[in-house]
Image 1 (cartoon, helix red, strand yellow):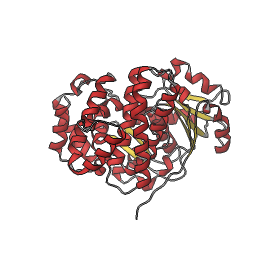
Image 2 (cartoon, rainbow, N blue to C red):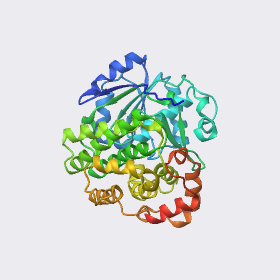
Image 3 (tube, rainbow, N blue to C red):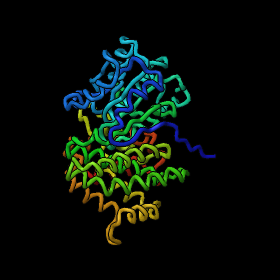
Image 4 (cartoon, rainbow, N blue to C red):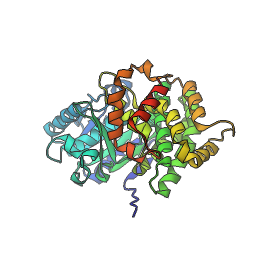
Length: 374
């Protein structure tokens, strides 16, 4: 038996941010904690949101680029101190994932670790999680409709916390919020969304609806990303990117793969503070080449959607796209060193995304992939 579930309500389109008061009313949120970050606050975007919520609503901005256990605990303290009754996540994947951690820990007892998926935590998460509204300001994460949060514990394990109850109860997707996104962030977040569509499509789990959504999202992102990168004010390209990213998130239940197993491990290295989307962009070509032995038919179908010449493989096309979008050419440029490989590979093998890669990998296989993009 296969369980196929789509559970949340999405308000999509230019200007949909204005629907926030109605969404709060629907969920009974009167005193929200707004989880965002200092970068978003500096752009003025946060002012547009705070104008729509009750005066004096609490705000938490100390969100690391990769959410941490200590940041979740600090945000929980702010939630309790202000006697909040719900959460509004406003930003990219980091604020949204951290907000999920707050929704969980303010309503469930004990330490965060016990709720991690690989430690048997999925059935410990109940419907009691605090109501959460997610409003993405990038087109990449998919977390606004996803059932998972990725949070780094104090020992640098980046673990997945997975439950249908962690899906935000409302997602407000307003592509106008992404119009000012700088080119590099447009590229890195867009390639992150592209990797979601590719990896979920290639996952061996049986879920045809998710595969159809993943293919549609892949096609939208492939066409729109270069346009949005070249012209950040292209409203149609921004809309297509946001829909593609949303679709990538809707397919998470099918599972990801080796790209994310490695990027989750790498993202847990606190000293480096690596950007998740950049890692996925670098890792996607070698992982595609690895998976071609068992997923060649599906990869060929993606190549048709991308309208690639018969002589051009998807992995090679992604390498070219990375270069065009200014993605670093190797992990060494990001500070990764070979003496980190053993720890990274150990964490990748333990990651929940490892289980749904279409072709199995050993520690050596992971090390070879890392070496190929150094």
